[in-house]
Image (cartoon, rainbow, N blue to C red; front, side):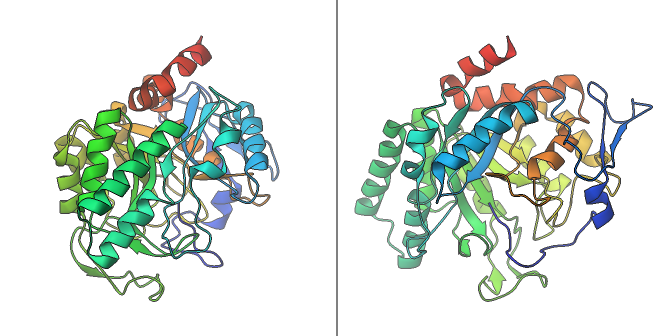
Length: 368
């Protein structure tokens, strides 16, 4: 999760007019095969739901109102044609006063089995990684505590680990950076494999050491960024049975999360998955949609070449804000342009594979 309060970040590739006049492809049609796409032009008109069911695999909530957030998410399911919503915990540090983890909302989520689920560790496991990076201590005692906390979260009912981070610019939570192959990340990979749960990781793409992009500020962000792609590949290779979901495809603030990079990593690492997020308020660089709302040809080819490796993860917050900041709408704009068989995989089947019995029976029931 990242949004820079009070300022725009990155290169805005969709002008303000396109935000108010989004192009939605009619249900059941595919980009380039529909002669009459439906245009949403009226301000305040009802948003177009998904053409086929999908799981919102990456959403967030108001930690000050967990019950209200859950009510809002449940109410949104039918409006969006969503089969389920999975909440994630924002990645955080121990010294941030707003830190929290899954316990704050878990009881409310459990009231809605088959509709809502929750990952965990952003406010504890991630904070432990950041602390270990700061102190240089990832020794046996630290690893023992880390493992105990991860297993505690699973016992309590989380279905995966996330949102973790290896490079997160300042926003709702502080700037954070850790090597993706840090010993605690490698331990988390082994734990995830052993318990058959995925890891969801937020990581800005930094292929080599570089200066902070000019449109970001230091402080609070680091003036120089450390390379992380090679280390990320070492994490992926460490335990091939651990499925890793790289969050926020379509929300790139360094300019290096390109189609070419994503394609290379997907080809090299069968345990790598990616979440699709398109945010018209902060599209960053390498945005998958053009100014007309149509998915760009190279992004469409990537998604159709690897239909088994993507999920929907719009980063939507609940309750939904009253302004135009409804990220799921833009993400579904992209989703509705995909071929029907690709939508089926990205919408529900890949989530069922990643989270197994935690969600698969509910998704089968929803489909029937």
